[in-house]
Length: 70
Image 1 (cartoon, rainbow, N blue to C red):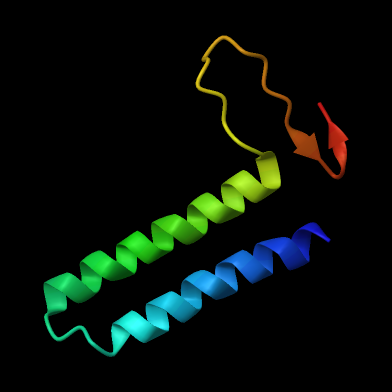
Image 2 (image 1 turned 60 degrees about the vertical axis):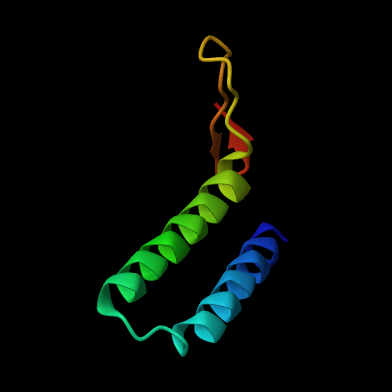
């Protein structure tokens, strides 16, 4: 189930990128937009696999490993 949620969110980002890619004519803008898309995909993978990161640095974070929390 988690895999399908992650793939769906990443698919949406890739669709946005493919729509935007054809309109970019400048190399610098292409690289900038590509990096922004890659960062959003990275953020999706991170938050969907570990959950939202707490703003409180002192809060205990649990890491899920193979369906268990450690």
